[in-house]
Image 1 (cartoon, rainbow, N blue to C red):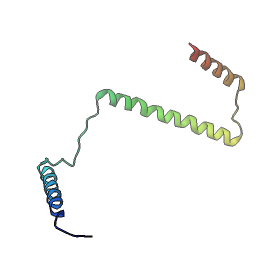
Image 2 (cartoon, rainbow, N blue to C red; image 1 turned 90 degrees about the vertical axis):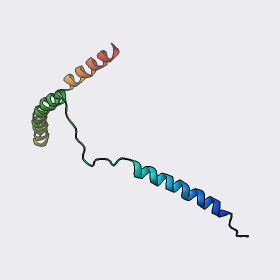
Image 3 (spheres, one colour; image 1 turned 180 degrees about the horizontal axis):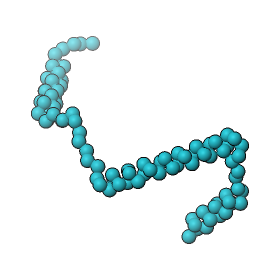
Length: 93
């Protein structure tokens, strides 16, 4: 294998490209590290309305868990079947 100085052209081109990239990055304005956001009034209302329902749902879930644990939770097969049929009929429409 013969080694000569032909690689110098590639080295120069590479250094030139690296210098361009570095200068472009140096010229970019620095981004502010802090970000400010504002929540719209509609979002605030939705958040307020949703936060109250979480407590109600948590209470229902806790009641169902306790009923299952105590063996007092009763399942109504008729009610489940009626709901399934109603859902299927609704999907057909």
